[in-house]
Length: 434
Image (cartoon, rainbow, N blue to C red; front, side, top):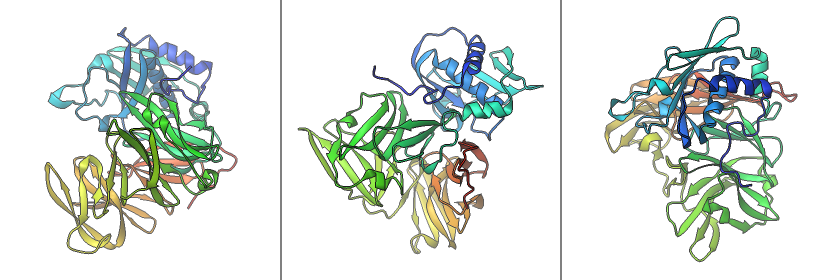
């Protein structure tokens, strides 16, 4: 049977105690017409207890029973939304809601609060109705949340799309770990060594799309929604993807703007390539002519820049050095079609890593040694300390910092707060990095 989505619990079986939690919270949800897709808005706050996170996951799974699939999104990324299918799950009481375009508020009947109570109790409230549930101990809840990937190393983490998900290599060249916002990490073993990957979640599909090697060909493989034209892409190769997998995980950027032509961009040995299908069933593989490749706000579009003279940031902000040299020690000019130009000073010792956005203002992410900073027109502040690589999200104000072989932290650029921990803690090979 062809699977049409990636279920919330893909790659995870939390056991009968968890499913009893799902049954308990499901009675609070009002009867509703079954939907093709619903969006679950989650507070983008620092980690709470594992007990609260497990109960929140139970609410998400209960909501999935009422829809073909569920998309989880940070409240902070949902300006302008308001289709009448959103549910808000807040870990604070009262809920920190969201305001949509036109001033509409998230309705109480589609708002859930999940909060710690006394003696290990977790309170779940929907529109004034409340139940109290008793999840397992904090340690057991953490074990359940990591049961799908526990002990798996996390290698080469990457934000491959504008959506709230992260991918990393797991154990060996054929294994990937997918973290979707608000759900536990899941492990996928692909039918061949993986060169590049992206996770896509939009109104039409949810898929883990990978480029793998099968019988000396590069082949696009899909987990989840199968009805995507990129399945037609395949090409013979004269190199080993397993060898490449020891050094990198490339994002797989989709270029599907035209019906008569579509393709994917990927990186191999530091060089960007473009694999394209065109009318007449012609498939070509060639080096990309662009310098910059970046995920677009729409999953099926890739931003490219042939010259690479400016940086592209979240929300269609651009930035480039103003009058002085590229990257080191200069004043940068940031511009946007609907905002006044902004000027950001970068000290000579700092290298510019990329352009982000804090609220509706541009921010340059910089590095000086192990210190990662955000530079704005008003000044700068430290985001994180890390001797290893950091990975910038293209749309959300997030950076991923690898703290150990089994832990990646997702840090808020605006505050330096750790928002999410993607962990496989307790693995036998745990070693701190940096």
